[in-house]
Image (cartoon, rainbow, N blue to C red; front, top):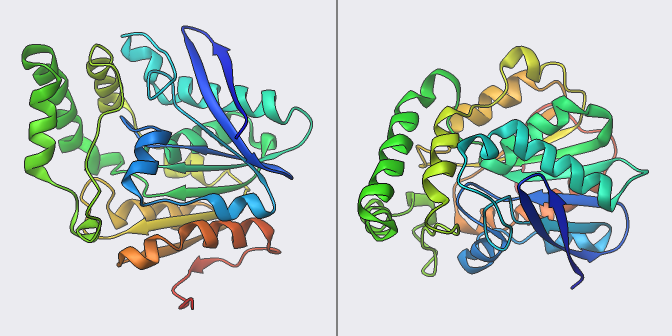
Length: 274
């Protein structure tokens, strides 16, 4: 699989590309990485490579990408600028499809707002708790950052094991919460996440792109309320909600179908799939 490095201010992004055709770029979630997603065994985006060139990259400071311990470096506008730079690097003359999970979904939205002409379609998976409902999450992230500074990364790993995954992931024996950043970068990334948020509904209504929203239930960090609000305010969005592991593992095929179909319909997609 072709791999590469892209230099950015205060970071070097590591990426890989598979398949051929128009470019689709995938952004992972906070404190995760390409390798963690592969180990977790939840998301399989390889169906996209039948018709697209799929690029996956590690966000700055995550996985094999470098970064520094500055919270401002992990703000959504900075992460969005990184995504846009990778799109320009890999597809300078043609619009790109952007896919993102959790933090990656937020990165995609902020990038699309900054340069809407750069994208043709968006796929947003498990959008995180946002807006007024995000207040408890903010305090939890700040406390976790302080925990790492005072007691080290092992304390954070232990807390994650106690909390465990959401119920919808109980059927995934190999799933573990991992923090794929260097220990000295974790507090900065967490403090940035504590200050971050999704765009306001007024901004969301300005985005013209067809959007596929993919959500699961029983996860307070990625609640269905966020996905429903996005589906309401994004003008050309559809929402699919998964309640089983089998259905979650269909997301790659659903995304591939979405990228190759005609004009999307509005509303919520609850159609059964074989």
